[in-house]
Length: 79
Length: 515
Image 1 (spheres, each protein chain N blue to C red):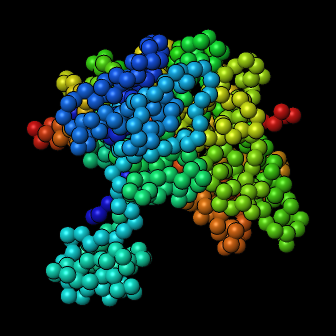
Image 2 (cartoon, rainbow over the protein chains, first blue to last red):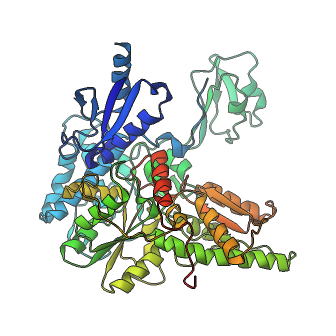
Image 3 (cartoon, chains in turn red, blue):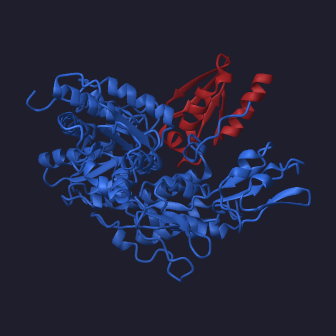
């Protein structure tokens, strides 16, 4: 099971984090393969420039777009 | 299997786009500058803080990107946009915006012409999917002889085409596409057209400031004026500024920012107090419930009399659009005080010197406030997007702030108001409660989006809808206020958050004072 933590601090929530969370939660094909958790601010943001932030396993990804997230997940699931 | 077609409101919903990113970063930069009390000249630097790259990223030229950001700064300050093509200083005289009273004037929604790509308007075109088939149903079906085959493919003569869409309907390859300006198709009152050069143009006599064109333009070429600067000045100058939060505020700042935390975070910004607009919704439910019962009983007493109905009062774009388009039905649309006004009255009763800021999902409220019968009952309007920018500028994160106990001020029905359908349900329930009987044949209808609202009224006017509903709930935004242009949360998350907060209310329905 891949663990994904979506930062839900204000910067991330206002700059794409909520949309990523919704995308992960509403994506049926990830059910049972990915564990999604909204987490408090991971404090890697500065003035919104790094937002949104997602932690996949131990690795922190900044300025994540939905496209990047999908690609990363695809690779992890293959690997 | 092909996915279902999405309507214009659904296409970019739930996606965080560069247009949103720039818009929000401009708001944060302006809020920060005012909070920190930087000199007005610092405003000039904001476009360079937003567009830091020197090669074009979003448009064909970096100077254009900065020019668009500059126009956004003007809107964030509450100023009019510059006349396109005229020589004017970049931010001429910002001082009038840097004040603690309301200065924002019509139009509240405006086209940033330099950002407008002059999209083609209402036309059918043949795509490269055309196979140049032998049957040529597109040619046969066209009553205007506008479709010809040329070079082995169909082609549409735009001069002859009347946009009936029959050719697209019959093409076995779905090779004929309909193109429309997204802003135009989002506008439910036909207020958007094109000027002589093809730039989008808003007809202010028709526009109801719903703001749906703002969030539907993929080029970010339409924006709304903000009152953020004036609100921040009012707080800085020590005035007792109160915030009243629309019922859709829950869930807007992420799943960890509980309603209690959001209210505490608003007070941490320097607001003197906070109030739930759901309280005002409770009052509207009771008042409009009584009116529905009157209509119901009048119809029973005289079934042959012209059938009236109660149109809800809470959505300003629906109210305005309905009164504009159907003046003969205007008397049916309630002019009782809206939840926003009722809540503001309560605040002013507590603190007569209070400046009241309505914070919600709605752009049309900015217009409603300027047209209120009781002047200055509500002083300013902010959207959640603007409140989020102020939070960011102040370094206040609602998710991290300690929970504060907030007295519950409203019922489940009042808190559930921002989801389409719930308003009519609540008012009908209130009518039944007043009557003390189930009123089984009480009919209510909900219309979402202005086009649907006006469509429903047209059916009523033409006598096509039988029976005429006793109650019509009009919502300018699809899905209700949770779908408003000033929201931050994706629809499904917002809906779930509203439902959960509503469930936690101490009572299901509002109680009349005599109860």
